Length: 200
Image (cartoon, rainbow, N blue to C red):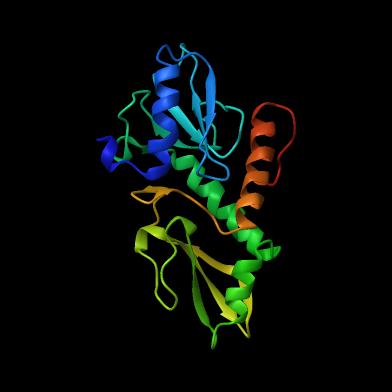
């Protein structure tokens, strides 16, 4: 099964799973992803590893957790279970990030469009050739562009988007990735009782 797993999962998960066979607390950063971390859950929780964009482990039920994998060396794509609470946070943060213009690459793409219309925001784990539209599982969402400017209120998530595919784990466009990580930090702090986190 490992051969069919995403490249990013193949690199870090086996090492983490072998070193945490008793589910002792432990974390590992994926060397091929700018933000991805694997966190083993304590022995008192179900036997699984959480995937997160944060370096410190959150509660297994946290909105900051992308999803879960079993703590075995051959875990792969078919074993990944998405955390449905994360998806709502992701799209709300992307919409807010678009309103704040945090991604130069997305802004540039909007500015170079030949006319008004909807533009796809594509996961960068599998960037399509120039002039091509990415696979549906890699299309994060769509937003309307008018006169070369993004209209953030029109952002719509693509229901076919997948957090993990055979090309790897979600990799957001530069700028949006850092913004989403910042939002997750706020949520994590709020869940730990360290902040109010009213917006999210």
